[in-house]
Length: 125
Image (tube, rainbow, N blue to C red; front, side, top):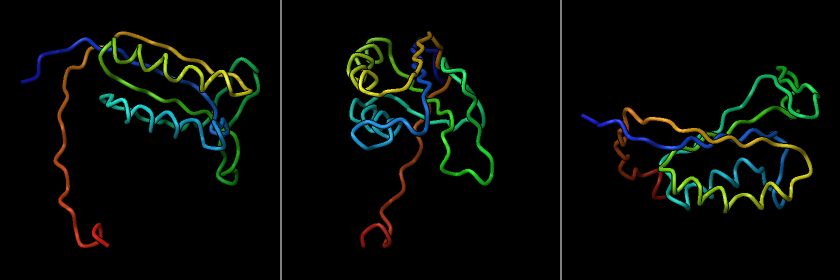
């Protein structure tokens, strides 16, 4: 049985159109969090939202290339999250539009590593 563990939840609000060196910023952050061996990172696509610009963005079934809200959630120990924030801060200084970053304390009540798939014939090709 897992014992509850205190951790930090880093939440980043941005747009699907935000870029860093011609790459989607949310992808850059996910790959950076993986390099930092953080416990987990998830990108959530919003249906509708607005930020400080007060311009409402929404996703309609015919608008697949439109600007939509994106939230990135990353969970890990406090010191690892705070070090990661210092690493990614320059990414946000280079984007021309707004964003929001929040940090809160959370309790991990269950953390279970899944089984890894064995390499199949398809993976070897």
